[in-house]
Image 1 (cartoon, one colour):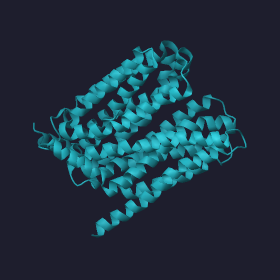
Image 2: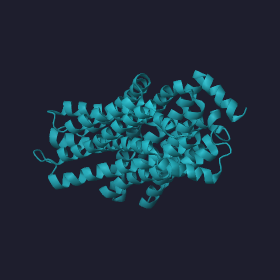
Image 3: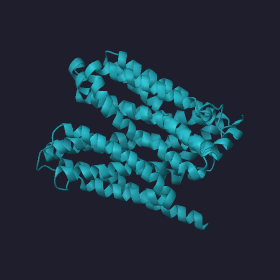
Amino acid sequence: MTSTSLAETYREGRRAGDGLAFCLMLVNVANSIAMSLVPIVQNQLQDEFSLSGAQIGLLTSVFMLAFGIGSIPAGVAVTRWGGRTLAAGVVSFTVGAVVFAVSSSYAGFLVGRMLQGLGGATIIPVTNQLFTEYVNPERQARALGIFGSGHGVGVILALLIMPSVQASGGYRGVFLLTAGIAALLGLAAILQRPVRARAGVGARGVSFATTLRNVGAVAVNRRLLLLAVINIGVMAVVVGILAWTPAFLQDQRGTGASVAAYLTAAVGVAQIIGNIAGAAAMARWGKPFVLFAGMAVMMVFTALAPVVPGAGLAIAFVIVAGFMTMALFPAILGSVPDIVPKVEQVGSASAFLNLTNLLGTLLAPWVFGILLDVYGAAPGRSGYLAGYLWLAVFPFVGTLAGAFYVRGRKRKEAA
């Protein structure tokens, strides 16, 4: 069966499209588990290897750095080789987890996390390219909802399973289990026929020089740049609130350390529900409206989280902000095919969004920490207020970008 006829078969079959989305969601689950591992093994690594807080933080940062930078070559590879790019990503991800597990040095830990991040970088470009080519446009919101829910599922599974594994098998057991999960779930995705197709519909006959021109074209696409600003806002909030809210609740609301685990689980559940709700909302009211309204709601709840009274209400506001981060996810990815003029540019454009994530994931939590150092974290000090307001700046700018995006869409429709 040729790539064209295979794409037609998947576009006509709802169950086939759902199966593809579900298997790609499983890979997203594995990637989300990996993102959540460092806090689980942190104490052991500090006790056995005398790692500083900065070194522990770098284990997450290097993962996100590789995840962002690796997206560009992943997007180029998707354009040339289609879904097969995911196989290389799964191998890199699995090998990285094994390298971390067998290492007894900080250098080995860094290499392992970098390989995991490079592997994870293939997921978004591959998924968006395959959805564009193989899923009927009327069903893409549903497919994106299924795929995106994998992030919340991974967070919850990491919380439920990995602490017990760490207690019995240490960090080696945690990362070896992660390698096994990644290999198993990755295999389920690779066995899907669109993933194994020699090249995507849009990629057939595309030269390497044309591929590079496509990358340059998406990088100066004005509407894609607006979408990137929105995406940066989402990532800044989701990373920032998970990194600092547990400490905020302990320092200024008097909660115990166990609240951090419950908060992580609650945000994970909210993200699953938010992703499904966001997919339904964009099908009902359109992607531009979801992008603008979602950014505005996220900004308000992030800014108010440190000033509402009591721990319960603060947690509720954080959960709403977490809900909105994933409610926007389907609309962000689903907007890419609407923005780029050619099918073969979808993978590169999705990779560009991943790369720009670095501005939010690296800058937001780091500056939050600086504000705490300057203004203080104790009760009565304003460090956390300044930190949350700093996080709210990202969705504020994203709201402005959403307004311009809506305006541009209306002008395009009028023309």
